Length: 173
Image (tube, rainbow, N blue to C red):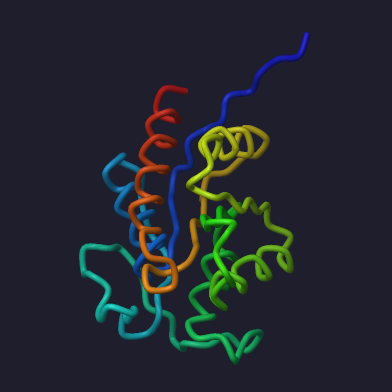
């Protein structure tokens, strides 16, 4: 008989501070009592202006990674992947074209050999997909990334709703 391994709750959530998925992930984790950190662009800048000071992020020394010089904010993206055990990308699968930052997250995770899951927060089984994926890993530090609110209107709320359920279910394991 197969045994079920319950997923463990990450000890730290990393994210980059952009509007949309990044800020929603940090706020949902903070509300669930999970430590948060991450790299953000120099001067704490995002598409809506300055990243709020209550988000515990550290600015990178440069905006662009030498590995992705044509992608804005690629340094923070790369460093958040590097400093995590796994990366969860939250993006609607019907999004017309992924933004360069989200694409770079996927590429960086693959290049670094980090576990990666891309999940659509609108799918009815999205929560189960994430929990099943986490159950197969030993993740203490989870990077959560995805498009900005400008690139994908409503993604912040969809991310918040998904992660609240996930973090609540992980609290019970």
